[in-house]
Amino acid sequence: MPAERVVYVVDDDEAVRESLSALLEAKEHTVRTFGLARDFLAAAPTLRPGCLIADIRMPGMDGLELQRELTARSFTFPLIVITGHGDVPLAVRAMKAGAIDFIEKPFAMDAIMASVESALNRLAETAEPDPLATTAAARLALLSPREREVLQGLLAGLPNKSIAYDLAISPRTVEIHRARVMDKMGARSLSELIRMSLAAGLQPRG
Image (cartoon, rainbow, N blue to C red):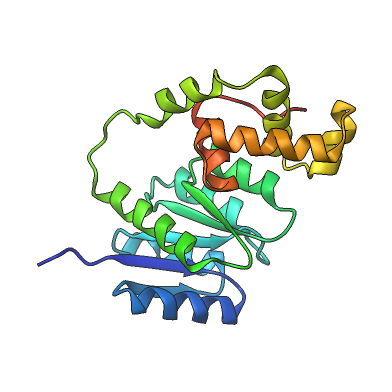
Protein backbone atom coordinates (compact mmCIF):
# COMPACT_ATOMS: atom_id res chain seq x y z
CA MET A 1 0.00 0.00 0.00
CA PRO A 2 1.56 3.34 -1.02
CA ALA A 3 2.35 5.82 1.73
CA GLU A 4 -0.14 8.61 2.29
CA ARG A 5 0.96 11.82 0.58
CA VAL A 6 0.11 14.70 2.90
CA VAL A 7 0.19 18.40 2.02
CA TYR A 8 -0.46 21.29 4.42
CA VAL A 9 -1.59 24.65 3.01
CA VAL A 10 -1.18 27.76 5.16
CA ASP A 11 -2.67 30.93 3.68
CA ASP A 12 -4.97 33.64 5.03
CA ASP A 13 -6.79 33.76 1.66
CA GLU A 14 -9.66 31.27 1.73
CA ALA A 15 -9.86 31.19 -2.08
CA VAL A 16 -6.20 30.13 -2.31
CA ARG A 17 -6.71 27.42 0.29
CA GLU A 18 -9.74 26.07 -1.55
CA SER A 19 -8.15 26.12 -4.99
CA LEU A 20 -4.97 24.39 -3.83
CA SER A 21 -6.99 21.82 -1.89
CA ALA A 22 -9.10 21.01 -4.95
CA LEU A 23 -6.03 20.68 -7.15
CA LEU A 24 -4.07 18.49 -4.74
CA GLU A 25 -7.00 16.28 -3.74
CA ALA A 26 -7.71 15.66 -7.42
CA LYS A 27 -4.20 14.21 -7.60
CA GLU A 28 -4.95 11.94 -4.61
CA HIS A 29 -3.08 13.92 -1.97
CA THR A 30 -4.39 14.31 1.57
CA VAL A 31 -4.73 18.04 2.25
CA ARG A 32 -5.20 19.99 5.47
CA THR A 33 -5.48 23.78 5.43
CA PHE A 34 -4.80 26.53 7.98
CA GLY A 35 -5.76 30.19 7.78
CA LEU A 36 -3.01 31.38 10.12
CA ALA A 37 0.63 30.41 10.53
CA ARG A 38 0.27 30.29 14.32
CA ASP A 39 -2.52 27.71 13.98
CA PHE A 40 -0.24 25.46 11.94
CA LEU A 41 2.63 25.95 14.37
CA ALA A 42 0.39 24.98 17.29
CA ALA A 43 -0.76 21.84 15.48
CA ALA A 44 2.71 20.88 14.15
CA PRO A 45 3.67 18.48 17.01
CA THR A 46 0.65 16.29 16.22
CA LEU A 47 0.87 16.36 12.41
CA ARG A 48 2.05 13.56 10.17
CA PRO A 49 5.07 14.20 7.92
CA GLY A 50 4.12 16.13 4.80
CA CYS A 51 4.84 18.99 2.45
CA LEU A 52 4.08 22.52 3.64
CA ILE A 53 2.88 25.24 1.27
CA ALA A 54 2.81 28.63 3.01
CA ASP A 55 2.18 32.18 1.85
CA ILE A 56 5.16 34.40 2.48
CA ARG A 57 2.93 37.34 3.47
CA MET A 58 0.30 36.70 6.15
CA PRO A 59 -1.05 38.72 9.08
CA GLY A 60 0.44 38.05 12.50
CA MET A 61 3.13 35.53 11.63
CA ASP A 62 4.30 35.46 8.02
CA GLY A 63 5.83 32.57 6.10
CA LEU A 64 9.42 33.47 6.97
CA GLU A 65 8.63 33.66 10.68
CA LEU A 66 6.82 30.33 10.49
CA GLN A 67 9.85 28.80 8.80
CA ARG A 68 12.16 30.11 11.54
CA GLU A 69 9.89 28.78 14.30
CA LEU A 70 9.62 25.33 12.69
CA THR A 71 13.40 25.16 12.32
CA ALA A 72 13.97 26.28 15.90
CA ARG A 73 11.65 23.53 17.12
CA SER A 74 13.27 20.89 14.85
CA PHE A 75 10.11 20.21 12.85
CA THR A 76 10.80 18.95 9.34
CA PHE A 77 8.20 19.94 6.78
CA PRO A 78 9.68 20.52 3.28
CA LEU A 79 8.54 24.08 2.56
CA ILE A 80 7.24 25.67 -0.62
CA VAL A 81 6.55 29.39 -0.26
CA ILE A 82 3.84 31.24 -2.17
CA THR A 83 4.89 34.67 -3.35
CA GLY A 84 3.21 37.63 -4.95
CA HIS A 85 4.73 40.07 -7.41
CA GLY A 86 7.85 41.69 -6.01
CA ASP A 87 8.44 39.09 -3.30
CA VAL A 88 11.43 37.40 -4.93
CA PRO A 89 13.95 38.78 -2.36
CA LEU A 90 11.80 37.29 0.42
CA ALA A 91 11.63 34.00 -1.44
CA VAL A 92 15.42 33.99 -1.77
CA ARG A 93 15.70 34.48 2.00
CA ALA A 94 13.32 31.57 2.54
CA MET A 95 15.28 29.30 0.20
CA LYS A 96 18.57 30.24 1.85
CA ALA A 97 16.94 29.20 5.13
CA GLY A 98 15.95 25.83 3.70
CA ALA A 99 12.75 26.22 1.64
CA ILE A 100 12.88 23.96 -1.41
CA ASP A 101 11.00 26.18 -3.85
CA PHE A 102 8.80 29.20 -4.33
CA ILE A 103 5.73 29.54 -6.52
CA GLU A 104 4.66 32.92 -7.86
CA LYS A 105 1.04 33.99 -8.15
CA PRO A 106 -0.91 33.30 -10.29
CA PHE A 107 -0.12 29.61 -9.92
CA ALA A 108 0.65 27.27 -12.78
CA MET A 109 -0.81 23.85 -11.98
CA ASP A 110 2.18 21.94 -13.32
CA ALA A 111 4.60 24.09 -11.28
CA ILE A 112 2.67 23.44 -8.06
CA MET A 113 2.52 19.70 -8.68
CA ALA A 114 6.20 19.44 -9.61
CA SER A 115 7.22 21.27 -6.43
CA VAL A 116 4.95 19.17 -4.24
CA GLU A 117 6.28 15.94 -5.76
CA SER A 118 9.84 17.13 -5.14
CA ALA A 119 9.02 17.96 -1.52
CA LEU A 120 7.33 14.63 -0.85
CA ASN A 121 10.15 12.72 -2.52
CA ARG A 122 12.62 14.55 -0.30
CA LEU A 123 10.71 13.32 2.75
CA ALA A 124 11.05 9.75 1.52
CA GLU A 125 14.78 9.96 0.80
CA THR A 126 17.52 9.14 3.23
CA ALA A 127 20.06 11.86 3.97
CA GLU A 128 22.53 11.80 1.09
CA PRO A 129 24.85 14.42 -0.39
CA ASP A 130 22.93 16.71 -2.72
CA PRO A 131 24.38 16.45 -6.25
CA LEU A 132 22.71 19.75 -7.16
CA ALA A 133 25.53 21.84 -5.67
CA THR A 134 28.18 20.15 -7.83
CA THR A 135 26.10 20.41 -11.00
CA ALA A 136 25.11 24.02 -10.32
CA ALA A 137 28.71 25.07 -9.62
CA ALA A 138 29.87 23.53 -12.90
CA ARG A 139 27.17 25.34 -14.84
CA LEU A 140 27.85 28.61 -13.01
CA ALA A 141 31.44 28.42 -14.23
CA LEU A 142 30.13 28.58 -17.82
CA LEU A 143 28.73 32.10 -17.33
CA SER A 144 30.55 35.17 -18.56
CA PRO A 145 31.31 37.90 -16.00
CA ARG A 146 28.41 40.00 -17.32
CA GLU A 147 26.00 37.05 -17.23
CA ARG A 148 27.04 36.41 -13.65
CA GLU A 149 26.31 40.05 -12.76
CA VAL A 150 22.87 39.78 -14.32
CA LEU A 151 22.24 36.56 -12.39
CA GLN A 152 23.23 38.25 -9.13
CA GLY A 153 20.74 41.02 -9.92
CA LEU A 154 18.01 38.43 -10.47
CA LEU A 155 18.97 36.76 -7.21
CA ALA A 156 18.50 40.11 -5.47
CA GLY A 157 14.97 40.30 -6.89
CA LEU A 158 15.70 43.24 -9.20
CA PRO A 159 13.62 43.78 -12.35
CA ASN A 160 15.38 43.91 -15.71
CA LYS A 161 15.24 47.72 -15.82
CA SER A 162 16.99 48.07 -12.46
CA ILE A 163 19.67 45.57 -13.45
CA ALA A 164 20.17 47.49 -16.69
CA TYR A 165 20.53 50.78 -14.82
CA ASP A 166 22.99 49.34 -12.31
CA LEU A 167 25.15 47.78 -15.02
CA ALA A 168 24.83 50.73 -17.45
CA ILE A 169 23.41 48.55 -20.22
CA SER A 170 20.05 48.46 -21.98
CA PRO A 171 17.05 46.45 -20.69
CA ARG A 172 17.10 44.54 -23.98
CA THR A 173 20.72 43.52 -23.32
CA VAL A 174 19.69 42.32 -19.86
CA GLU A 175 16.94 40.20 -21.45
CA ILE A 176 19.49 38.62 -23.79
CA HIS A 177 21.89 37.88 -20.93
CA ARG A 178 19.04 36.54 -18.81
CA ALA A 179 18.02 34.12 -21.57
CA ARG A 180 21.62 32.94 -21.90
CA VAL A 181 21.91 32.46 -18.15
CA MET A 182 18.73 30.33 -18.09
CA ASP A 183 20.08 28.26 -20.98
CA LYS A 184 23.58 27.74 -19.57
CA MET A 185 22.25 26.91 -16.10
CA GLY A 186 19.66 24.54 -17.53
CA ALA A 187 16.91 26.27 -15.56
CA ARG A 188 13.29 26.11 -16.70
CA SER A 189 11.97 28.76 -14.31
CA LEU A 190 13.16 31.64 -12.14
CA SER A 191 12.65 29.60 -8.97
CA GLU A 192 14.77 26.76 -10.36
CA LEU A 193 17.47 29.26 -11.38
CA ILE A 194 17.55 30.75 -7.88
CA ARG A 195 17.62 27.32 -6.25
CA MET A 196 20.61 26.31 -8.39
CA SER A 197 22.43 29.60 -7.80
CA LEU A 198 22.09 29.30 -4.02
CA ALA A 199 23.21 25.67 -4.16
CA ALA A 200 26.33 26.80 -6.02
CA GLY A 201 27.04 29.38 -3.31
CA LEU A 202 26.26 32.50 -5.35
CA GLN A 203 25.09 35.49 -3.30
CA PRO A 204 22.79 38.36 -4.37
CA ARG A 205 24.53 41.48 -5.53
CA GLY A 206 24.33 44.21 -2.91
